[in-house]
Image 1: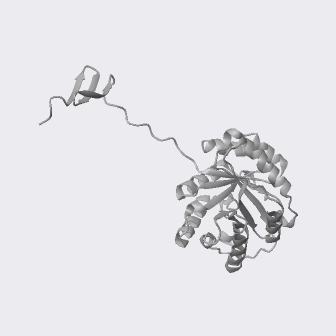
Image 2: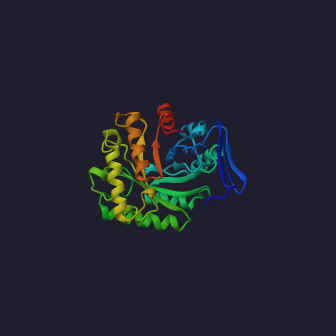
Length: 282
């Protein structure tokens, strides 16, 4: 039998609950409303800069940047020389407008990796990405050869206190027959260039994300260590990627458990980048 002092009283539109004679809740609008739903969340974004113009644009849109976003600062791709001074300067400029940014040194070819590590890379950098695609020095399309190269790269950057990122060609999806999940067992993070005809540009983005996520799960590697990529605007091949194709792939990546999504842009496609960032709720 309830104590006379434990009461629920409703008088007109006013309700109150008292326990032990102490009122613990009172409202003039009836029962308390349910707690608000949490705001929608979106995955982190990775960006690439390889010149002053792209860096300048990124620093002009701080409203779209978030703590934890990754910024790949790249020199030395396609067999060209490296310039660590540029990389350090771009990181300094971006850090001023995006506190909490994560910086990734980015280049192609193991010799360039070694050169950058020896040249005084800024302490802002916590990751190093090796660009692994047919146009880069030392590239091989075999699974075993790629695994060996990534193991060498991983050991090298770890010895310098950095984490490793394999920035992998998307051609392994439909041409080389790669198991990207196995790459995730030898480097700290894997970014797959899914922007081409085998992926986003061909309207196959969500299917490719699902394929890659399954490979990571089979290999026992967290899908959060996988990043998929889309190019906004037009590809070098002249194919124009639609906002829907980018968003379908982005949403599939977030649903699969990817912690971030790579948005590549170039001069002339800044407005396309803004549209995507707005669409994901930035």
